Image (cartoon, rainbow, N blue to C red; front, side, top):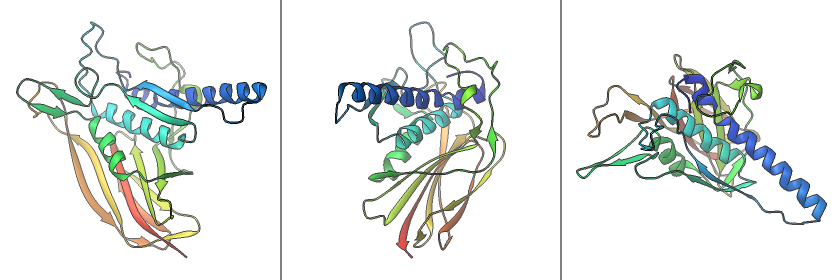
Length: 254
């Protein structure tokens, strides 16, 4: 994590680099040792953490952190052929999506990408190809308290995407992170060799103004539901600035 917006929302791509490097090392060892079924990767532990340095570990997350968490989840989905387990640290209090006091429990912003991913994800990950606006990160960008650099991995797609389908290819779910801090992005979703069978269902989470929740410092979030009509193999959705959206739809074989 970082106090700089772009560094913070793009930093998860360091995890994707780590996955690619680790996969290469495993494949090299498997080749040299003639291992037919090499082990897969457990990514333990992951989350956004950078503010508290006094040992308290009580993070209060911004919505930029939620976008980072959504990107982490997309990365694990895109690489699930090698990443078989990825453990979020932690689940309650400390660096966690859930905060408790003796009187109440509330959810932080990072809870919502985890929730929507879990509700939408289907059994099989599929490749996605994205084309559209990109953003770079200056090589001299301050990474904060961590030494990791991601600028050389850019330019980065403004909208980060992952997709899953059910075993029969009868349903698709996409998870889209619009990292544009100021403007909505229009996403034209096209499926190859298939068609949408009815409208797409949308769930979008954005930041809620203020901190009206019962625990000091915890920011709110807003989840909105909607739908968009499809035409053949195409559906067009509008992604609000700084948002995480799931798109779920039935598919028909043309």
